[in-house]
Amino acid sequence: MSPAATQEVSITGAWNKELVHIRIILASSSPRRRELLRMAGLSDFDVIIPGVDENAGAEPSPQRTAQGIAEKKCAAVASGHPDALVIAADTIVHLDGVLLGKPGDRNQARSFLERLSGRTHTVYTGVALQYGERRLSAVEGTDVLFRTLANEEIRDYVDSGEPKDKAGGYGIQGRGALFVRRIDGDFYNVMGLPLCRLSTMLRDMGVKLF
Image 1 (cartoon, rainbow, N blue to C red):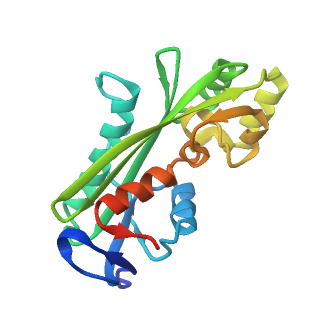
Image 2: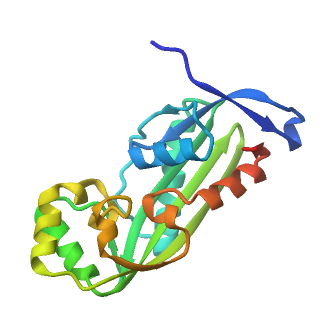
């Protein structure tokens, strides 16, 4: 077994420490979240996939749904790694009172894209952190306007395979960007991890990226 990765970060506040090495765990299977963490300066971290059901439960709002699933992911991994800083997230797409998660098959991916065509939907990402006994969670929302999509565009995009592991059935960092006319909010939130929100949450926990 390879040794756990650690990252040197500045920790202030209750711990009264500076420039310490801590283990950071990303509780997610998403390659996009790994890419975004590295872009934010967290280059040394481990990935542990939480065994959590991502299907939405009976939450009162889409915001609470995304935040609640992120909290469950974080807690599931943190329980076995109490000395690590655990970062978890969950992304959903909301339109007309309906939550669009990851499509289960090609037909559902096509149905999602037909719903989104020519409409504005909201992408919510819940983010949860735990370090020792300290826990924080929040949710970020971004409005995304799709242009009207032709049937053959939807068919060809589904055929590309890109929709299969993405909330709402599209990836804004890939060919799905060709459908986006406008966004209002954090672009990286649509990719799956709102970096601005994450950085403020880390600072609230005493972890500084600079």
